[in-house]
Length: 76
Image (cartoon, rainbow, N blue to C red):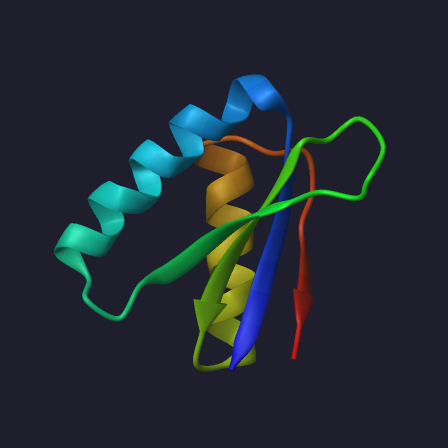
């Protein structure tokens, strides 16, 4: 299981959750969690779970390009 991690500011959290909820309604395999952030300047970290590395990177890139976020990283 791979994790796409996207740090979010307080004003970005609602939009990110809204989009994740819509995606999870259409795609039952889409799983995510919101965690508290230890990063300076960010309140939360959105964690999106994927089965493979390529999907994890594609989801992260799509999310920061189309929804919110400055950057992301993938953990295996």
